[in-house]
Amino acid sequence: MLRTLDPKDWKNQDHYAVLGLPHLRYKATQKQIKAAHKAIVLKHHPDKRKAAGEQIVEGDNDYFTCITKAIEILSDPVKRRAFDSVDPTFDNSVPSKSEGKENFFEVFAPVFERNARWSSKKHGPSLGTMDSTFEEVDNFYSFWYNFDSWREFSYLDEEEKEKAECRDERRWIEKQNRASRAQRKKEEMNRIRTLVDTAYSCDPRIKKFKEEEKARKEAEKKAKAEAKRKEQEEKERQAELEVARIAKEKEEEEARQAALQAKKEKEIQKKAMKKERQRLRTTCKNWNYFADNEADSVKMMEEVEKLCDQRFDLLISRDRILQSLNEILASASKEDSKAAVEKQVEEVNAQLQKEREAEVQARQAARSAEQASGGGGGGKGWNEEDLQLLIKAVNLFPAGTNSRWEVIANYMNLHSSSGMKRTAKDVINKAKNLQKLDPLQKDEINKKAYEKFKKEHTSVPPSIDNALPSERFEGNDGNAAPWTTEEQKLLEQALKTYPVSTPERWEKIAAAVPGRSKKDCMKRYKELVEMVKAKKAAQEQVAAKNKK
Image (tube, rainbow, N blue to C red; front, side, top):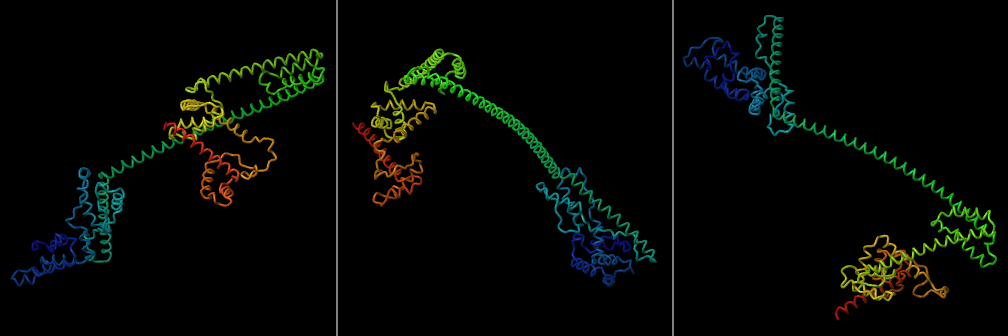
């Protein structure tokens, strides 16, 4: 192959092929190039061939000149880069869009890989796969759109400035060469840009990213629209609330003004009524209450006070009656005034009598209904004391107590002052009826029981007002408030902490229960003991009955 080379056309020869390195080319090292050159020189040097009897061509016309040019160019880094830039075996083609759409990675991956040899930066990013992230793909195209190529085309200069005869000719040659190199560099960069644009338009990942970005923007747009809608709804709701608030405030203000006006009118009426009552009393007093003796005068005075009674305001419109009565008394004689007052007194007494009768009938009806709903209790009545005792027993013996209702009935029979003997069926039926009561009625029962308890425990016989305090309960100062759960726990703990043998035991127990005196603690202890004894007695009696 070397013998067929034209020494005069050395510039168009493949220098790597001349040295026997076509398989390595730009990847060949200087060591490999020198070794290949040495091997070829030993074989094709003119002296070797001449010694072998071969006819040698004189001067530069021998093909050995091609070997000399090859080592001269490939051993010089600058000249070698110039030759590598125009490597005749390099494929400068760019795939079309139709080729890239079908098999994008198979078509473009090798193209970018072979063009990456021109990059000034080593280890550029690879094309990647379909699973590459957006950052990896964006980094790849950013690298190629800003591609920095070291490829230059000085090897293709048509004129050599060394052959110029003068300085002006050399300058002209340099100018022509620079223009030719710039044009080829521009064409090379356009080729790279075309390659990148074609790959970008065919890249399925870019299409996927664009669709994802579009979906994201649509989602953001919908989210913004939804947020705007909610904000508008919130504004409308706030506006409605503000309107409602203003309307409510206006309504409340109107109601307040109406109540204030009603209060003023009521005060006026009250003052007028007070004036009329005072006028009636003064007039009757001036007539000595239309009586000749003290007894009749006192009796009439009581009747006049009935007319002036505040409770009477609820029965009839007394303002007009008192006003008309005062007008009659102002102009009538003593006898006519007495007749008018007595007539009015009779009407008031009749009205009060009707009211009393109605109240008695209502009480009788309520008692009859209560007795009728007594169930198994038959005609056994339940007074307020029995009801309170039942409530106390139900709380004292909670659900789960053995023979609970028999124990409750026995407890009531032991502690009731009515003398009625209750059975388990009686207390069950009554407990059911109490559960059906309105909460207000239950509160009324508890309130009456508490008032009765307070009355019984605060009333002291006059004969012992001056008695000295006993040794057990010193003084009469005590806390009448009910014991709370926390105070009860503190008392029980103090009783355990300070046994009977402890000196000044009750003073220490009282100190352990904040807000309670020695008297309170001793009294509470006595109540608890009595309650426990009563509870045990009731349970033991029921147990004895069950054994029989």
